[in-house]
Image (tube, rainbow, N blue to C red; front, side, top):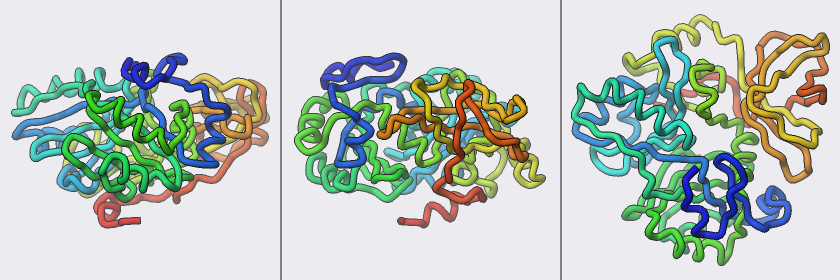
Length: 346
């Protein structure tokens, strides 16, 4: 975990988690506008005259779509089509791209890509001089523009003012990520907290779950096909581009209907948050899936994402002996082409 959050009064609370002295932070995000340091996110920069061509051969995104306005989702796979990382691609200058992803995956992905980068005029570096700050709430777009002088973009798009870059993610409330230079951190934080309540970054992770948006962590590398976390339903896979590492397996699974697991939303009336990978079993005690992500919500229950078999299961389903309830995803489980998504401004 990066240590810049201590400069704004946050307290470390385990791996890649920080807290504030704010009662029921998840409830605060329902009632008003909140701001949180997204220490669980990191940025890998890929730059150079061959950067686009290099990434085109490694990522599921159609790189020509990352044009400084649209900022597509993407993933990086091994030769067997299993994900090594998933990310959002931002073009922040000609021949310069930022990959926004779970922080624990930045160094492993860099090490993986370096095996191929030697054949291209490109350089990679961890942008630990930047601080991702999350804003949640109906007033978040106006606050961002008033305090940071950056216009709020549409979902999966970006806006930029000098070194400040902003992207918008889906969720039950408007959600914006401001990528700020560390040198501006304290002043920007003070400006934002004048009208937004500081909350734990677990609140952001909870709203990722509610959006059906699963971010891979280092312990989950090489475990799932992209479709197992609904990545093609979120526009994270281009089936119209050329080859990339793992593309053959990913495409075959899609066109032959061979995806046997899917990401689902669930709620769990539990006192503790289950660990990643905890088994979900059916009424007959058979394993039907595993926990992918989990957080506590404003009503003191656990919300989670789980990778589950698509076969019919004997109800009820349980996690550590506690019954869980399926919830609806906020999107259709069907292919969404990023070439179409790039034109959408809703």
